[in-house]
Image (tube, rainbow, N blue to C red; front, side):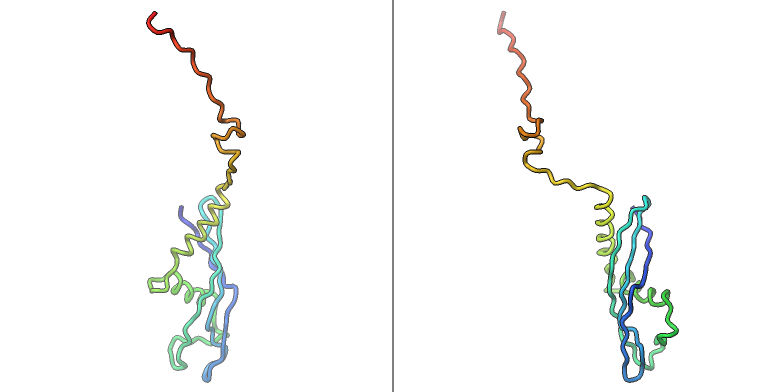
Length: 135
């Protein structure tokens, strides 16, 4: 079953360096996956970000960051084509939560097993009367 995803940032970690202030070095985020029936599961994650060199073209001042921009960085790491991709693991966790909400898990105790005398389902059917042989 395909999931529809909703990403949300829940926090940032920032640090000053010798040349930069308020440099974002980490994120906290949540991913909500919803199936076609409207049942959802969530995964919370934390993604560290590389500290760029002061001359690096990719540096964006903290005051100019947008949620979409930072989520793009996270998504590139988490679900991109690089070695850090762990989207399969996230999907497994979200689907596990969805299944727990969708399907009831029951622990069956010994006295409730179908063959248990206490369950009432182990009655022995009466034997049919034997037909007389050769008459």
